[in-house]
Amino acid sequence: MIGGLGMPELIIILVIILIIFGAGKLPEIGSGIGKGIKNFKKATKEAELDEGEKEPEKLDK
Image (tube, rainbow, N blue to C red):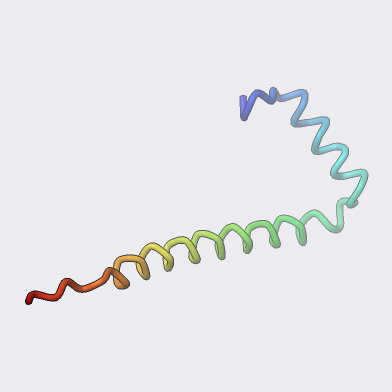
């Protein structure tokens, strides 16, 4: 179960997506979602690295 959804619910959702977008558009949609996830992971990784570099330096007096 994914988030409370069982197999019958997932099949119904996939059938509705097929009806709305058609079989020809599914590879494009999947590719777009994959690229979006990849870019999101890359951006969060870069943000974590930037935060480590931007820590204020302590000055000794």
